[in-house]
Length: 114
Image (tube, rainbow, N blue to C red):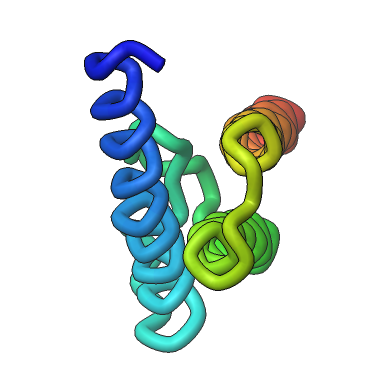
């Protein structure tokens, strides 16, 4: 493998942990601290009627954070192949993005109906 690619792969691997911890931090702020500022889309923009949508956002953040941390730990413990952990990480991140988009659109539509 080219040396630059190896460093890029290492950087991607190290990036799994801050992303997962960040998702769990957002879940903790929503679930434990009841901080509605963290009921937001992936960019941090607040979702309309955040109290109503707190539990779906909490579940999405917990699932994404735990999923990423499990992938990172499995790479360290059993040495998942590169294609496996990058594909799984991409699946988790895209699922996180689209799940939050669905919640945001449903929240906006619910607010428009009122």
